[in-house]
Length: 219
Length: 168
Image (cartoon, rainbow over all chains, first blue to last red; front, side):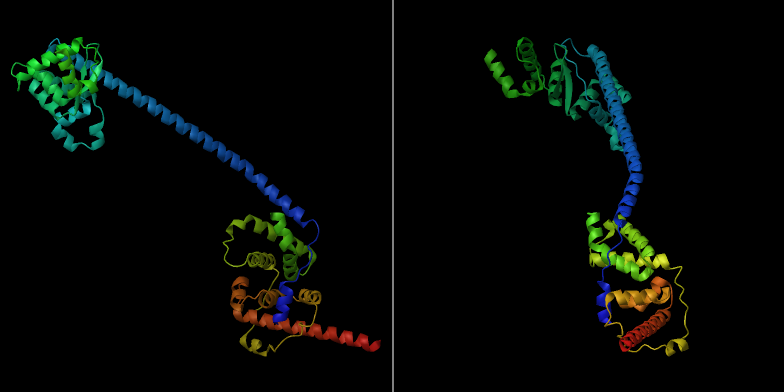
């Protein structure tokens, strides 16, 4: 029986002619049916990709505009409010909205989620600035908790400085400054900086060594 | 690549188709259908077992599927089954493949299917029963009957040959 199995298992009979041609034609026909579906699905994919890109671009443009608008409004508002309260030293103090919110609305921030807290909010910014105008101590307290503030230079350029520097500036303009000795120093520095060719950037303004060097040079 | 596969396996698979169908026309259709199935499902071959075995199984299944309606297997009772002889059987051993093929093709579809599946492809009776949707006992009895018919065919052939020799 095993012998028959081996014989017949491997037995070969030449297939009739033309079978391969029929198989090939049928496979080609099946392939031809599939192609339009593939093309259609590719087209749909392209449309979807284009739509996705368009949506992303729209969102980018929209949010960029919103952000720049809110930043402009913040600066204008703070500039208008602060011009009266500060002396005529052409220095404007503004505080970044997210930092201000953290400082001022500490209780509120606990109840809000993180994303809301980090989002720039016009109303809250105005509230904080208003508060800063009416109560300078509060402003200082707020500034103390901020990492940096933005000041407006002689040419109207915005410069970020540390909150410590803000305290110094404040001390120089307040009769009851916490360290009145700073008033004199800062006024001296300011006069020097006004006539100095050194541009008041964050780097050189905060660099005490550079400032000291400049003072020494002037002497 | 497809043509290479076809050239490599078509002679063997055509034999399989012939054994199950019994005629060249049906075997041709089976060959075409089987190869199209193979080319469409080539990615499903997982590599466990021989590739030829996988191809052969597709051809056997295609042939069985094709002739399932034609194959009518009558269940036999246990009493009938006991009467069927299943002696040591090697009458076909001395015949050439071509002659064996011819005799197998003369069997009825039911006998042919079970004989091919069990004796040549090596399926167990349980597997045959599952594939054909019959009892295991029916598969055994069909095989036994197929063997009886084939023995008779061989004997008749041998008688004819001896008569021809004697007349010469």
